[in-house]
Image 1 (spheres, rainbow, N blue to C red):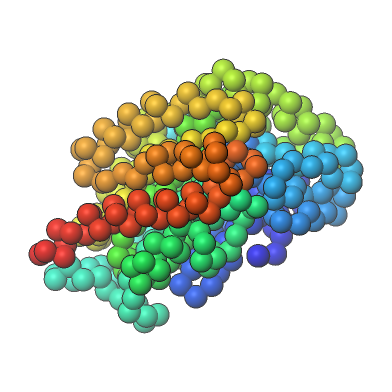
Image 2: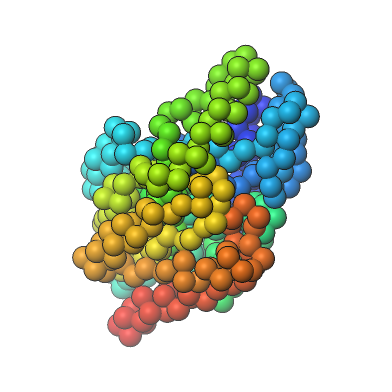
Length: 363
């Protein structure tokens, strides 16, 4: 596990941050990328509680527990994707092919005329580049290192005999994946070697986020600590109750799809032959969201429409993990999967990648 994040943070969900640690062929999630998560990204951040300098205890990985100062380890403090009232829309991000993308990709080697990716000096095996939320690296007991062989990106890579570059963080939405694509140098390094790219975000976008993004993001900055704890306690009380309304969602479907299309277009300019896979949102049984997920169906409709126009195939995470979430060994938080869920997602992803790469193999 990586060391805890900034000691100043009081964010029980993100700090200490169980970001995947860097290992050969695997990437840690970018710490500098603006993070947005839906309300309560429903997992604690580490296997062992650690206390910050002000005595606030970080949450344990399994279930919300009270820290030594009486604060409940909550799901609610993670930076969140905006609710419908947020002014940030995909139009504000650098458009595909714009100067913003040029910053990210201008010096990146592109595919040669035969369609083979330019391979960096680091090695010759293709890379599975995965831009994801915490579903990619959380198991039944909490966050795991990026090289843990049991998480689905590594199961897929093992099946294909590829390396993995996992760029992920708790609560990431399609907006965050786009920001990582155009702003994270580890992504830029992986693109030339990529055998395929998976946009494994969108689930957080569809969850209820009735309180403004800025409120949650700023809780950890409130001082003094006693006031911060009161603010957080109030947020934790309101979030699950307001979530039962089911709206607004963390990111409206058309905004999520807009970011996905910008990401796809940016990659297509460099590697038009590069297979890209998207996902349909998972399901959840999480108290922090009032066990409500009315935003999923609108998101599914928008994603399917985008898939039809863009040609990007989709893996239905809900179909793969539904039994595991509601009847299996899933994480007690009701969001993250058990090992059967990861295995099922890996099977579905391998199948989708094989189908997406079939035309390339036949060329």
